[in-house]
Length: 163
Ligand code: PNS
Image (cartoon, rainbow, N blue to C red; front, side, top):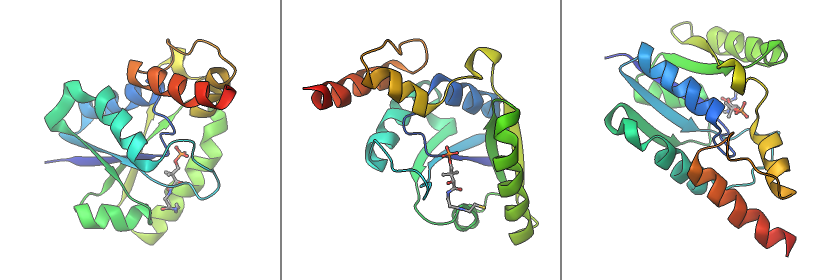
């Protein structure tokens, strides 16, 4: 069974992430969507909230998708799960440098781990969790960019902040 781990901050998950995960499901038997911690970004949603939103957004795939959280090194998580494939989405050339560096660092640390890049649908190539949060925070409509559960949670989170 080919298991792929798809790590990210998912703060929150967007339709672009869902598209990448669904493409990965065409390539692998099982995809573990891993909420990791990016030390250079302060998260808006807790790990528990992010896991809950992802689980809801992907519930139609239930048995082939697992959602988990880990706050250590990705390679340690892969070892623990006996997985050797990491999937990352690519939106535009601007993502490349960051991804290239990490893929090669991870390969140097563990030759068995392969990073596989999946291109997002063009219509999602300009979406990011940060820009979605910015629009939602200022009262804009993000319905076309995120799963319904995320739209609802963003409204709850930011309506409190604007009061
Ligand atoms: O969605 P993001 O913010 O691009 O995801 C980044 C994430 C969580 C995948 C990255 O910060 C990460 O890999 N965190 C785990 C720590 C780790 O393994 N760092 C070494 C990478 S070479």
